[in-house]
Image 1 (cartoon, rainbow, N blue to C red):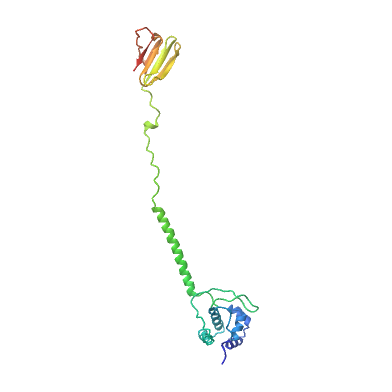
Image 2: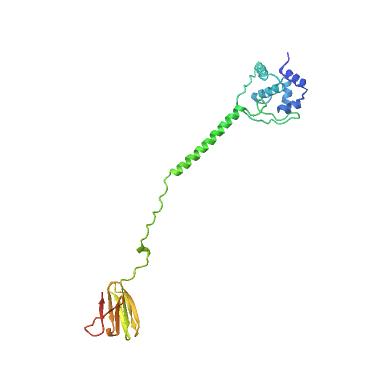
Length: 248
């Protein structure tokens, strides 16, 4: 009865394919294929990979891959090396280095990406994106819901009185010298001096009258006085023309 390796070798030669061509087509190293055909499956690889390579080579040579693997499993069990059944886990592409005849090997089955694992990968990626989006939405809502610091209270509109120029004094007192003389004016409230100087003949001076003024004149007959443009008489003094009067 033919061994598994002999059946592999016979099928390959029947197709007229060299080891090198088979290695390039299956992406399995040529020295591995040579060992398979020599009925030697003892490779320095995890059993899962060896089993995948056997299945890929059997499929390439148009064997019934599941049935061939079942015979392979029986062979391994008889040698006391129970094969490790293939799982749905995808190990991806594994490089074992190239020999003179072989090429880089692939993962179990020698095929492409496992569809089941691809589906799981897409689902996992979608879940990750969903988590990120939810986190961003929570951050945005939290920021918008947070109480904002109270701003400065709006300044109350200023009234016309506050923004307008100071109101004109209630009264203005004007002194005109008919002859050279002297005058002194003091505020009664704080005793501050408003004016203390000589007036030449014909000179006129006006002063704001805010409150009571105390006016001292050198000669009352040499001055004319007006309050808000209205002529006012300077009162007479008991001691003569020199004296001080109160201008309420």
